[in-house]
Image (cartoon, rainbow, N blue to C red; front, side, top):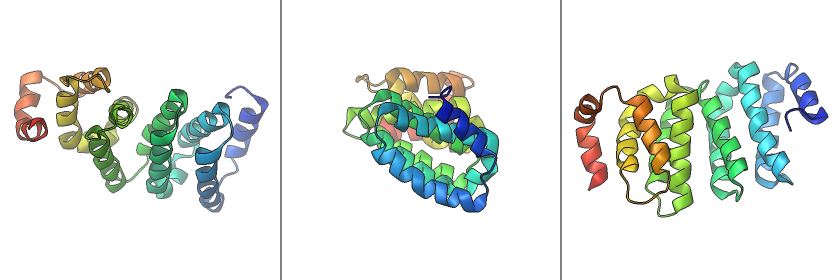
Length: 193
């Protein structure tokens, strides 16, 4: 937990992390994200990465691709909604510091998730797009050609998997409805049919 003695200790130790420690930390995080015992441990790992981004973002940059992969894989398999939310928020925090090719790969993963047959994966795709929209808008901006057509189609989907979240993504990122529709018309048509 954030206010626990362990959380406070981790915050204090964060100041001592450098590039060599970060490399080792990333490999250790994989184990914690996958097999950490208890909800607090797994959700706390996501919160730790978020705080790490706020304090030591430049150290995250070289590891963004690996962290995206680990967090997204763990988010799609974890049964707890709280843990999934923590991981998805961590992904958005990392996206602020990631290089554009890494964020592009993440956007392609959002596309894949949103087209999944599994309702939970479609919902995760919508939640991830919304978190990026809210917490890493600069990282999302170059990816709007991929994400905004999904948001429009997802907001008008007949199934509820992420429908409200896609509506929020659309509302937060489309300047004017008619102008945005004209801009992304071909992409929206391709998704709709």
